[in-house]
Length: 549
Image (cartoon, rainbow, N blue to C red; front, side, top):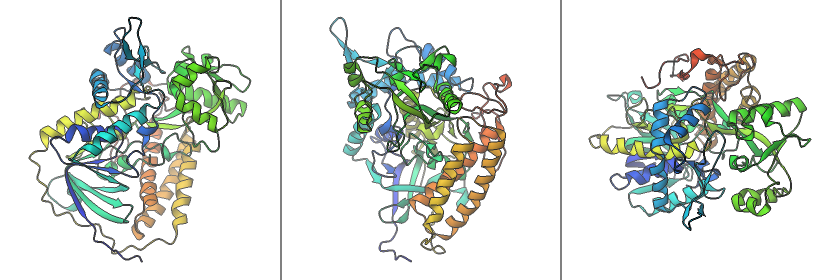
């Protein structure tokens, strides 16, 4: 057994933010003038999904566009499951969110006008009826994240804790303390390999999604559903976890790790082709390549299975080379590294797990079911996305709900005291593991059967098979977790297993096909389920009451 060289520390802040993407860092900046903020990052502060977001941020900025049109498009993409109040709240706050980023110095792409002025360049992506996506070439996430990090590092009231992963939330009721409130989190310092206590008046989950539950994903390795799993264990409801978005076009190459080919490529005229060179999207939807992602991903999946093809192709080579290089410099350079010149040839593409449309149930102030706990960004279910996320609404949601959460925290956390006696993390009955192969094997098995049985196209038989597998794995993981010291891989595996079970049970309960959830046993949409999300609460069976009741 390793000896502890230093005693575990206890950190205190007014607000603890778990996650360092656009949502978490935006919230930190909104709070920092009046609160002491601690931000946790599993790795380097920049390593998260925001960094890899290529497309942009949707907002109504053109006089020819309208709030009502953006709301209408979002509701349409959500296939009857969006919460219209949440959609309108998000869309109405879009323009001021873009202005806030501009004021911070985010270098969005601009273009000259006919009268000699310079304005933001707006592109169009799938599901949008207007050009309303602001972007920084094809590396918008990197531009936003870099700017936010720079601002956060300058602020004395924000303390960053890189290489720290939350193990579990601290719930007063589960400690036998008065009330039921989130008091902080137990956090593993990955450098020191010690679990510390972080206490705070308010705790915010900004941990991102859970796409690493699948074998193939466009997300970075840290997208392991940590916040969803921790909130679930703390007693919070989750919603719509059957709706996992698969991005239609990730580069097909063994070394590319599913490098994302932005939807903006299709928005600027890119065509999807069969191996024969024949276009096919208009056979599936009159909008062709600009159909919502669920339709495009299913169409590609269908054609790949029909033909027995390893991949299909995305072609924008009919556009001028200078146009392609100017609009997609990052994608162009990365593709060249793998031997593909998108100015001359079609790119091989396959779908990959991309975005978690469900999550921890919140209200419009980002509050969860547990007092003192908030959730923002991809970890949250706000009602914005419904059964399918429309392109570039995700970064917008991060920005809008970060501001909403900040307003509520500033108004309601002044009088919260933190005098609870939180017990230290107990490692008295665990040892260092000598069987790490168990973790790696279970990690691989889980992601493979989720890909095979709970992917783009599902069946009741496959879902039942997946449920039996996850129940067996849960037992093995619990036994391992109870006997050995926690590690980064074990924490993530434990969280992935929780999220996998929630996804499977949610998918089994939705006996229809809608948006991102398509099952061959119930291929039609049931109008009786319009507007009714799938709700799960710990210790109960799936329900379909309003999450905001």
